[in-house]
Image 1: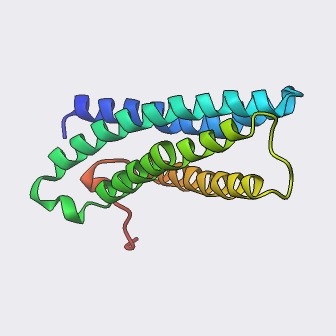
Image 2: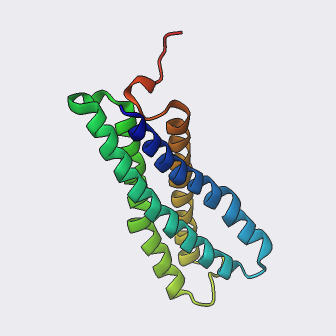
Length: 159
């Protein structure tokens, strides 16, 4: 792998994973802490997640193409390919599956959710699944940051 490729990969990975951590674990919690209007905080959080998901799709696809190219015919044995594919699949599920369902529930309840209703329960379930996916993506991104994207950077069980 050329040093320019490695540098490009590190920049994309830093932008993507750093953005994930910044949005999900700093900016969004601060919104809910600083704003009294939870609905507004949720709306802004949703927009931030949409932006970081879009960035993740672009960076993830570019990184996947790069790792596939590096791996050649051995791509199936490269753990980074499978991690990137899983991350991209989870982003897609969240952004194109769960987010529209949550938006539709919010639109159907413009005054907010009434605790104990089926819409409130469904929104809570979708939000929980979305949060778990985000956590999984963040942890997989952490693994890529720690171990790198190059074929020679695979975790080894040997000392």
